Amino acid sequence: MDRISIKGGKSLHGTIPISGAKNATLPLMIASLLTEDTLILENVPHLADVVQLQRILNNHGVDVMLSGKRSGDGENKGQTVKISAEKIVDTTAPYELVSKMRASFWVIAPLVARMGEARVSLPGGCAIGTRPVDLLIMALERLGVQIEIEAGYAIARAPKGLKGGEIVFPKVTVGGTHVALMAASLADGTTVIENAAREPEIVDVADCLNKMGARISGAGTTQIVVEGVAKLGPARHSVLPDRIETGTYAMAVAMTGGDVLLENARPELLQSALDVLGQVGATVTATNEGVRVTRNGAGLAPVEVTTEPFPGFPTDLQAQLMALMTRARGTSRITETIFENRFMHVQELARLGARISLDGQTAMIEGVDRLKGAPVMATDLRASVSLVIAALAAEGETIVNRVYHLDRGFERLEDKLSRCGAEVERITG
Ligand code: UD1
Image (cartoon, rainbow, N blue to C red):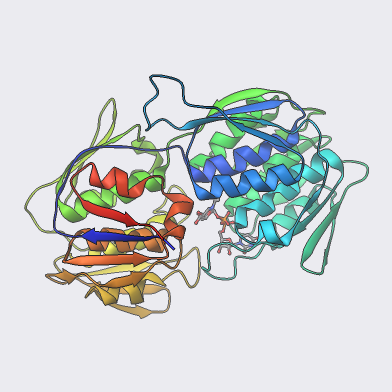
């Protein structure tokens, strides 16, 4: 199993190219199941989760072609992926495939909308709380799908097709909103989604579905209206930049000090996180090329932050902010409201010398003068990168074990950081 070695203490200087967003790529690839025509996605990141989803799509009979590099393409360019679900040969998504990645459960929506049936294993994914799918199932039922849970599978049937309806989410759910959008696009009649997630990745997927011929309005607001169409067609779409990757590297620069351009980043996708970085003492500037983050000499100020659905501070940056606050001058409070049990990084950060106590869903982080390198273990995708951020400021060497979590969501992390002066190395095997 690969490990990453980090020798802390170097400031970061240079340019980090921001990849296409994982959390948009996955639902976009899944949306390809809605049409027999080809969907071309550009700026797709090279990530283990993308490869895993490709396997799941292949199992349904979908052709996924990764284009080769053209001459002149830099290694930093995302890949172009052509996806053709001309014939769906199997409407079952088996446990062995779905259990590795939670978002793969979302295939249930396009499969039942186009084929009238789907049999999808209940999901696995990051171990950050129970993460049920009841609201995804509720959304499909509102569109006339009959669902039974049997032997760990959700079995969905709509032999006469889907019917538009009203879906009111009692809590904001990104996955629920994706599922509702995809299913409603091929339903007969109009669907109104209330309390919809407003995350930028929802808007990106809705844009792509509209290019495919869907009639979706209001994406990015709490009410989305979908007028169903009989068929969707081909489209070409470029994936938006990854706001979580952007925020992660912005926090890394705030941690080490330095001056880094986050190339292709779009500040409006993570304004709340950039505002917090401003309070902490980093300087964040929007430029034509992306977002520039600098921090010189002065120490880090503590903050109080609560995670919220977009446009609030994202739960996917909570662990990274906590790592940053381990070096603040004073005590910070971070409250997690989206997922229970998303504090598994606390123990590992403590191994590096962090002082963190938990009170329910709130973490109190007392800033310390120094962190010291140690062997640590990555527990989930975002937690693992928080350990990298802490290690960049720790004295001596930190070894991060189980980096397959990192590879699920961060493209060439060690390369991107070491090009900016960090001492980061992958140890394979
Ligand atoms: C997506 C993101 C993930 C991010 C999360 C919240 C992708 C691939 N993943 O996950 O990175 O951390 O949004 O921004 O885009 N819930 C229910 N019942 C349901 C569904 C959700 O109770 O049927 C709850 C969850 O347990 C959680 C909350 O709703 O407490 C939000 O979850 P949701 O927005 O659905 O997260 P995901 O779509 O799984």
